Image 1: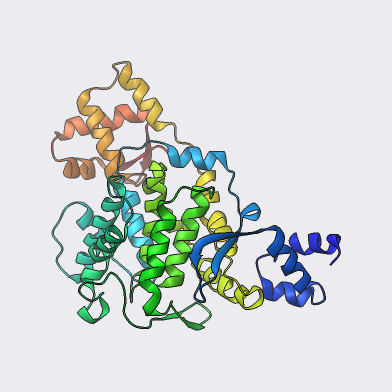
Image 2: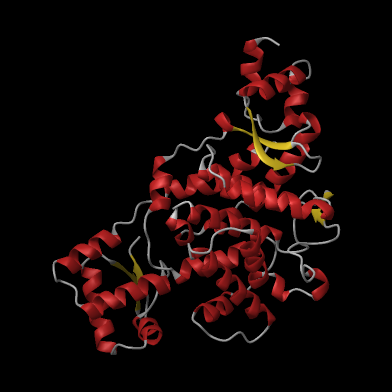
Length: 386
């Protein structure tokens, strides 16, 4: 085909939808695929259901955003209860599992679960804490441990991996948003495919870490190694891999909430990869990488850098903040995040400060510009400045 025609199709807004391209460019489409294969395809050392290598289009999915990388690399030592809460609620909501926010808060505050739903919340909390520990490297065994503590232990025995096995041993059916049904990888091959995935995760190569995390995410959904919980595990592994690669702030951002707000696009990307393979005869993960870049990475990069921590540290260094006030601020930051709280809320949650101390703290930190005041008819509330 003519080079100009190839460039025209390459730059079409529907570049990642082969059904649309084949309709729009019926004469040139096969020639386009051939040139695309020769110029852009990069093989990944993991297999599709037919034993061929999965591919991605390296030069079309490269993520160059320096702001995003700086944001994710920022060393943050404080777990934010509000972000943890949002992650648990969002990753569950994506799969239409609804948890009461009050129950999530209760478990995050250390209360004992009172029903099955709260036990599952506690499992997700333990799972997030597990991947936050950089000593827990990614192996088949640790993936299994993560699966069982977050999902497997709360399933009926018939839906769990059998004793001595990490994965499912039978067919699993997946229904997407368009109600089209397909199956995961044949259960006979799940173990070998997952071994390849773990090898891929732990090998050093040229694939950018942000792109590789997307590939890992997609592949868990594609292989579907368990009867239930594959989506939650895919998102946890995405975050886990980024943490292992030094992107410490991954767990201090509402990762799954970005996906939950774009749930249709998320599921459509999985379907698009499979549908495109009917034309190209290969699993090309590029549409999924493009989707994650659009709905997760780009919004993260656009988040305004918060100057609260540097300002707090400056006042602390100058001796303008007492040790008790510093403790109260750190507690409010980790416990409430950017959510509103009253003096009574802080007094009750902190549990080791007189009301007068709390009152003095919020007034002083509001004057310092570290807290916003939200005025209500009967009382004021406060929020960490964002």
